Structure formats: C-alpha cells, structure tokens
Image (tube, rainbow, N blue to C red; front, side, top):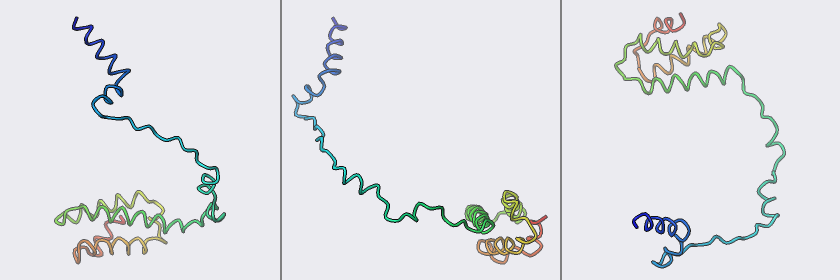
Length: 138
C-alpha cells in the first residue's frame, strides 16, 4: 500500500507538477516566441572599421618582457612581510629574474637594475645597497 502511494506521488510530481502548483496559485510563465529581424542581427556583426581586425604592431619584445618582470616582482614585494631578511628578498628577485633569460644580458643590465632598485626602494626605502643588487646578478 505504501509503495503504491509513493508511486502515485512520484507520477504526479514527474508529469503533473505544474498542474499541481497551479492549484495552489503558482502559474507557469511561458516565454514568448518573438522573431528577431535579420537586420537586427546584422547590426551586431558588422564592423565599423576594417583596421580593427588587422594584426596590431608588436611592442618591443624586451620592453614587454621587462613589464612582465616588473609586474611579478611588484606583486611579490607587495605581499612579502616588511621584516623579511634582505637575503630572502634578493634570492626571490633573482629567481624571478631567471625566469626571463632575455633580461640577463649585458645590454639590458642597466634597465633591469634600475627597475629592481626602484621597486626595492619603493617598498623598502634605504634598506638595499649596491652590494645587494650585485647578489641578484650573481
């Protein structure tokens, strides 16, 4: 008997749920089928300028990589605690620098050193010396 009641409750729920809900006042809202004019669709897909789809001029590769390096070091220094040892900070910056081998060349050394010293002085004013900068390069 209990199984039969469970069966009828399941069938009523499965196939007549909206009808049962309508009895207690909950109505189903049917979506209106409105046709979208083709002209409306074409407006969304037309380009105003053909040049928008042409390849953009590439940035200087070293400048782009230097920006990536700057972003990563900046994020690291923003999250590290202020009382962290200098050796730990220098080691972390060195590890980040090693991820960008194109920056570890003689012609990029001054630009990278300026970037590193500027970031270190921004977060830890007057804490790092030139000798500390040399540990990053070796």
